[in-house]
Length: 473
Image (cartoon, rainbow, N blue to C red; front, side, top):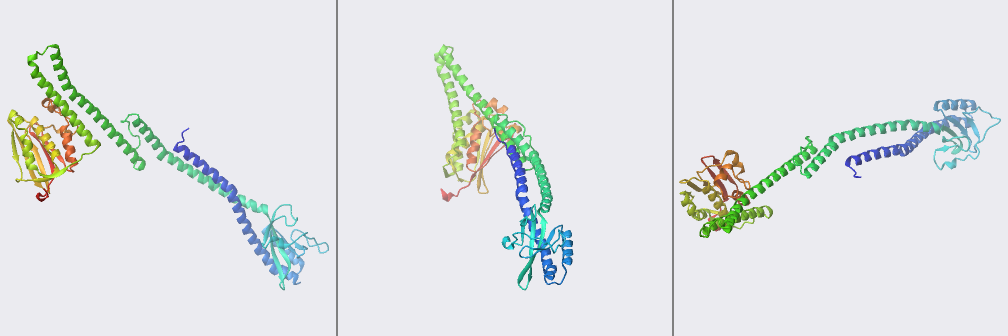
C-alpha cells in the first residue's frame, strides 16, 4: 500500500506518544526517584548531624539524661515521620524512637558495620534486617576526642519516597497528555492548512496529466502552497494555450496544404482523363508548378521555424550598409510593383548607414516585409521605406497604404499561420509564417520589431538594428 505523507505523519505522531510514555515511565521515574532520595537523604543527614553534635555528644559526655535525649529523638521522629536511633559502633541500640528506653534489656543490630556503606552517608534497604521493607537510612557519626563513639541514624520509609515520586510522575503524565493534545492540534492544523490543499493540488495535477488542462485549481492562499497552486494553474493554462495553438497550427497547415494539393490533383486528373486538351497543357502545367512552389515555400518556412525553436538561430554577423541592402531588395520587386503600379519611396539616412548583423537574415526580413506590403497594398499606391539613426541604433520602417489590420488582430500578426479574415481574401498564396520568421530573426539579434496599423489606412512595420562604426568594416 502506498504510504502517504499524512499516514507518515500519523505514524510519527503515535511514535512520539509511545516514546514519550516510555521516557516518563522509565527514565523520568528513575531520575525523579533518585533525585528525591538524594534530597531527602541530605535533609535527614542535616538533622542527624545536629543530633550527633548536640544531644548524642552530650549524652556520651554524661551532660544530659537518656530520657531527655529520647524525648528529643521522639520529637524529631514525629516531625520527620521517621525513625531515629543512636547506636554504639558495636551495634548496641542506645536510644530508639520506636521503642521505650530499656536499660536492662538493650537490643543490638546484628552485623552492624558502617564501613559497608563504602563512604556514603546513606543507604536503602532493611538496614541489617531491622525492617521488613526498604528504608532510607542516614548515619552521622558521634565523635569525641577524634574517636567515633557512636552513630545517629535516621530511617525514612522508601515507600513514602515512592509515593512522592508517583505524585510527581502524575504531573509528568498530565504534561505529556497536554503535549500530546497540543501536537494533535498541530496535526489538525497541518491537515487543514497543508495536507488537504496538497491533496487538492495532487488531484488537479492528475487531471492535468490526464489531459484536462482546464481543470480549475481549487487552492487559493497567500503562502507557499498557494504560490505552488498558482504556478501549476499557470503552467496548465500555458499548456492549454499551447495545445490550442498546436490545433490551430495543424488546422492552418492542413488548410494551406490542402488548397494547392487540391488544385494540383484536379488539374492533373483533368489532363489525364482528357478534360483538358493537350494544347492547353502548358497553361495548366504552369499553374501546377506555381502551386508546387507554394508547397515548397510553406515547407521551407516550417523547417526554418522548427530549427529556430529547437536549435536556436546561428547568426553570421558582419558590418554592411543597410541602405544598400534595402535598395538591392527593393529592385527584386520591380515586376510585382509594375504589375500593381506601386511606387517605392525610399527615405534613407546618409549615403552609407553601417549596421552589424547577419546580412542574409536581414535580407530575408526586408523581403518578407516588402512582399507583405505589396500583397496588401492597393493599385496605384506608394510603399515607403525609411532608415533613421537614433540612440546608437538604426530603425528601419516599411510602410504601406493598403487595407490595414483590424485593431483586434494587431497583437496576433506575428503568430504562426495567423491570417486575419480580411487578408484571407487577398493573400491566397500566403503561408502565415513570414512575419513569425521575421520576428524570430530580429529577436535573435537582440532587437525589436513593432507594427502600427489602422484598418483601411495602412500598416507600418519598424525594426531596429545595432549601429556599427564604419571603421569596423
